[in-house]
Image 1: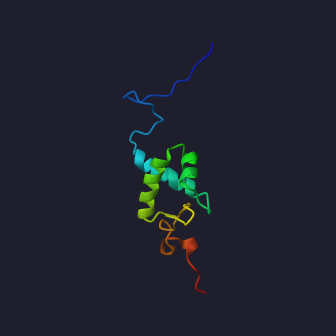
Image 2: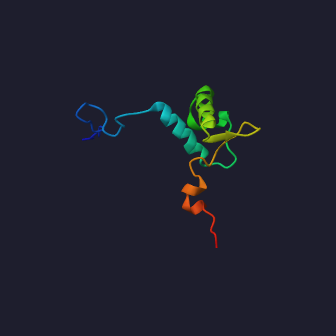
Length: 100
């Protein structure tokens, strides 16, 4: 006899493994930051689009906002990389320069 395991459900009938509350735009922005953290050379909008499985127009809107807010920067080749906004030296012990 084969047993098929079904995802557990909570009291309201939702899949217990899925998040209760979601913020799709935030998820999209964080996905972009997650991809950019793995590259020093950066990615173009097309490359980000392929890596994230989203349209270029979706990525463009998010990247423009992240760039305007100072979290990513674009270069003259339209490659985007992370800035150090999240890691200023005064907040990062391993980034501090020793004064010996």
